Image (cartoon, rainbow, N blue to C red):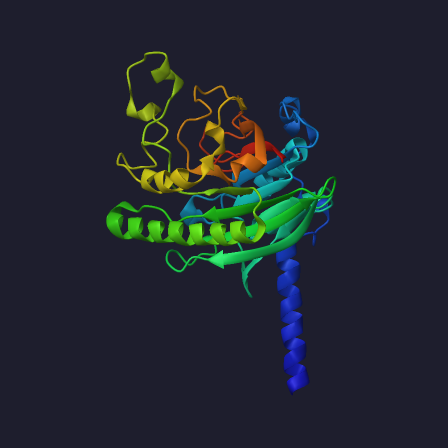
Length: 342
């Protein structure tokens, strides 16, 4: 009987591992579009200013759950897979990676990329994993820290990976997190949950810092904007302010909804997009600026151990929603930083 139970457990673990780790489908089975779909993407500037630089991406890819506004993943995964191949990030801090993202994204990129901490529990995928380029980086250590308060939906965690570059052995850490959010029906309760998550996030970062003393790139959807108003180009040119042109208005329900988290984190760590004298790239036709307030950020500690070269928001029409508001890839735009490790 014990042998039978053991065999069943092994079989279940195998099935779960296969379902989460990707590369279980032929890549062709995941494709939706022919090459014409990606012609505009391949014209976009993916230049790396220094061949020794590492590229870190943060990308909330949007789950397929209808209650979250999600849409079928397969076509979105194909578009995102091609964007990964074009921009070649060394590490991606991902958020909202539901099982369909594992199923349809990973087989298309698994020749080059591996996933860190794919499971949140025995039967649940980690929706906030890290994906890294195994041809350029060696993974030394990884882990997943679950927040003690907040939604129990496999998003509210800190995932981390400690990496050495294969070329020169330089070390860095990348984390990915997805904090809770303000729901206006219980503002004070949600605020206290978010602040408790920030405190636990700090504990995780400090533990890693004390152990490794190397740069830590903190990617994520922090559900917190750097300020509560946008720098929409219409405003910058002197046009009258209109709330419908404010990126923050509708997501914030017209009320302040999260800058208190950003203020705490940015007081402790550097927001890379505001480092002086770096190259900022923001390719869009919709009038927004690269430093408009956003939910997604890449913070950096030990800034003296990494030289930031470039910050990008991948904001071309390839990434923006369709005119009918359906998501071409996600309801978030990926952000990237290029850095030389000291």
